[in-house]
Image: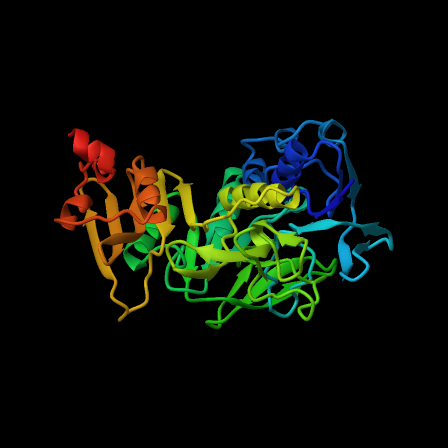
Length: 418
């Protein structure tokens, strides 16, 4: 019987294991999991921080998941060494697990704060359930918190802390929030919404050093503009990096992430990768990319599992997309929203002040390559499908910016019926 080894028990690893078991009822399945927890919803940890969900609501599978799957699990350990000749993985405890097929689904790690004093007590990241537990334990005695970074993690951290009654200042190195997902116009709308709900936002500034009190807890932040802010808690949300520390790039090809083919296999036969650690093709960008989002991890994991079990199934590529509610403002982004200049892209945008909405669409050769919706995002799913499906769109594209336009008419069958 084949032995299937999976590094990571996040949604990519879980999806792969379930796909394997559906096709291979007898093969061995072993997980190596960093956390001593059941598989859980990582996106939901911000709800726990905000108090709108409890830790008990995080698991995505029941307590008998491993038993029902007929799988072995090694928890609280990390993979530290891969021996691809002997087909073994050594864990942080020194244990060795052998395999016939291997899935690298180790996820991603938060980018560390590069500032003096970054290791002080009271400095946290928001990546795991344990991170949330640490932040909640640090709330007593916190009169002011800093959130570093204006991306999705930063928003979720700031919202959670504000929901707990903690005054928060968000420091953003770029000129506006969500700079990797939206343009300056949408960023200004988002920033106004944040400020309206009591969040202090400072752009174009970073932390250069953190000072501590006598107990070693953060007490003050020195800023790149020469200013300083008192704080007793800092949450760093500056993005993530694929978790590659145990991979020898001389044995497995890596770039930003582990390079995989259309079957999720790496440069080594029988070794696969999926989820936030894997680099494949981005449908909008037309190049390799790491799309570290939940839906992509689910699909990658499922396809990797089927291929590990012997069924050849191809993955056509991923699409970066996000939907987030920022207090009372909904924001949807999909595909390439800030295209490079001079490469033939057509960018169309319109803001409706009365309705408080903004539309931005990016085209190339009559194909929709990216979309940004701020407010009234209900039809955004159609735009996502248009981007991922490379749907040709001709005629008067300006009509797509109208608030009342029904995007369903972009779909050929709907347009024909009409």
